[in-house]
Length: 235
Image (cartoon, rainbow, N blue to C red; front, top):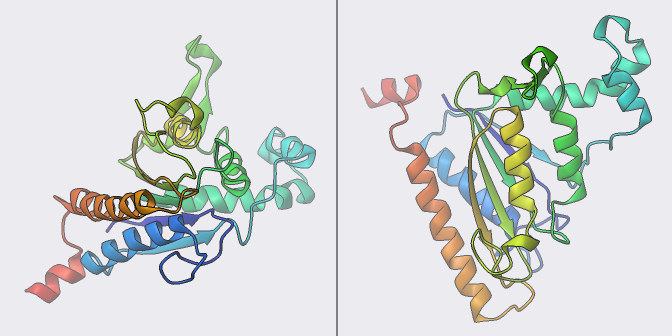
């Protein structure tokens, strides 16, 4: 089976198209997961609404606990890292990461950054070996194929790779760097643009993004083996 981890980070709680001022990225991630589950209903999905329940930010207590060897951590340190441990375990267990995240002021929403800070962990998702010289970092999530899908929205336009304003978009590049650092190198990105304009260009961008989501799901599903229970039912 393929295990999905579905994260939403938009401050808007609803889905555009259902709630009048809902989130485009929530609608996009919901469409992706719903289409996947239609094709593979037995694949488990773990969902986290990062905006509704943000992970705690990295603070002095977190840093002190993280950089204390595990056998020497006291109960307070273990408690401080417990949320981060849970986030890491969810990510390690997943095969496909689906992230719905709007572009906020050129980067990712704060709750998503807190999630990134919580899962990039020495000894948990990346190893550090100083004997390797200039390349001491070893991604620990490269043990098996994992993929990520980033579904975003932007107020402006022209921020895709190679476009005139690509240098102002740090959301997908930062996620690509952070996830690649821990071993998730395959990342697919789809975005809605023109949100601030609210005109026909936005409508066209939304329609195109939804079509690309459907095509991406089909692409990722292609070649996957059937779930054993689905194969039994077909037989």
